Image (cartoon, rainbow, N blue to C red; front, side, top):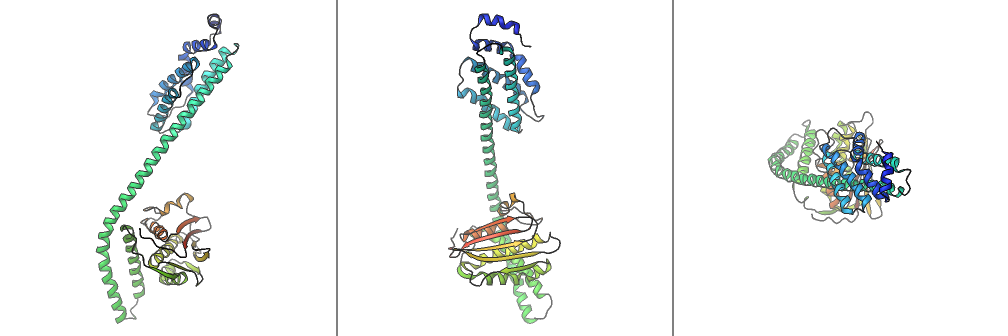
Length: 387
């Protein structure tokens, strides 16, 4: 494999370590490359298998040229960029590529070490070859990362565009939906009021009224997301304690049916300036979501709502002892159409955040094994901006 006998003849004709190493590399090119290829790892699904050997030979020729004369950055980049693009196209782990480059480096260094270890002046050349492989690996991995990042950005852009398209379609559907369902719903609600006036003791009227209110609320959600603006904002100063008491009373049948207890801790002096209908919708949606989540809990089911003043902000928290939301999903749940419910629409929390942000506030989620908490933070003197 390694002809030490022939080294004496070479030694006599050549005095330059570079010339001796170049001659040796050229004479043993096929053997070294075959040793290299015998030990590398190639995925069965790699669509660029045939390029692996060609790239190994190209890298080998770069080593020869680098020993002969300094390489330019462009010479290194051409092969590094080409290889990086192929690794992205092959859709294999970049660690496989790094391993194969190291195998090549190790193979060539071993051949050179064995053949030139008795000759002085070769160590700097061996160190140079080692650094050359490391530099090539760095450039290729860097380019691979850049391409992957670009692909990810393009995918995110595609997802964003798709969401916008879906919102546009939903807006068109909702416009028809609202007209077709709200008009008969208004008639039914009107007749319900007449029935209650004429027959105040008629059973199940409260339940029917409650279900109609819930249906009206669901239709309003689609109306919110389908319109470019989020309802004309009428500002007023409101007591959060009174608002929460109204909501709890309204949701009493639902809480009872879901076997959920709720406690509210809010001082009468906690006030904010904003649109009452929008804030009511946010609170209602968060409580309804909590009730739904708690249906997965066996035993005690509890919601705790609290309001407090922190400097110039009002902080409202909605806590429940429902199942944990995975950390990577605590932000995704606010995206349109993302839902963890079997029959969910994925627009409730999206609308909630938009309405809170419209009041210059924030809506966040934090979840542990013990509890899930949604936190709203709104300035006391919130100025509602039109979108």
